[in-house]
Image 1 (cartoon, one colour):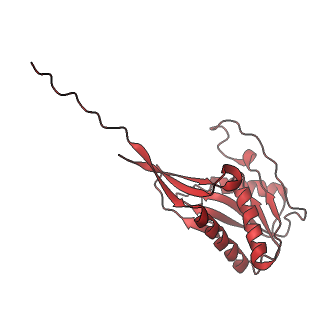
Image 2: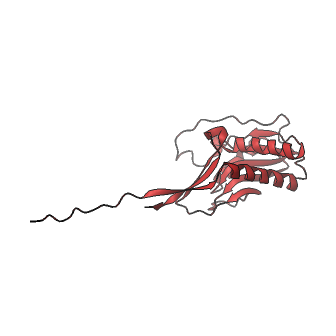
Image 3: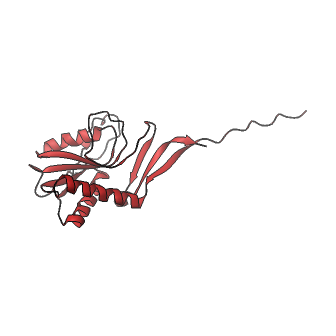
Amino acid sequence: MACPPAAQSSPPRQPSVKVILASADVQRVVDRIAHQILEKTQGAADTVLLGIPTRGAPLARRLAARISTFEDVDVPVGVLDITLYRDDLRRHATRAVGPTQLPPGGIDGKRVILVDDVLFSGRTVRAALDALNDVGRPASVQLAVLVDRGHRELPIRADYVGKNIPTALTESVKVTLAETDGADEVKLFGGAHL
């Protein structure tokens, strides 16, 4: 008696990965944001860039360097740690509190541009605004992000956006930078393919 053929199982689905920005693209996007900042702020007068760790801090330094290259203007750069201001502290593992480093001239009366890698729900930016309130009183606050992926939960929008990437909630955007990860790239993870 012949045995029935063994049931063939299909291979497991692998999550799809799509490179949205390669290294050269990231550099072009940073250059474009730097030009937009110069244009919108009339030469970056009285402007301070504050990077939100982890990847917002090196992005802020890159923007300041490019602004300096384009217009020979030195824009002060700092780092704004938001760890204690997050609304998800109870949901996630304990994180180390990082240093907030304000530029020597501080932020009082200045235009502060918060810099981050990805804008998603808006909760990170809300935490940054709360943290900013505790360290000074800027004249105005703007936001620069490398990627805006949508799905806002709070009424927050970026003033400077490198790339808008429409995403599904099941997808995720991963930014890597040379300073923190060894390479510049933006990838979209999600969906599935055979």
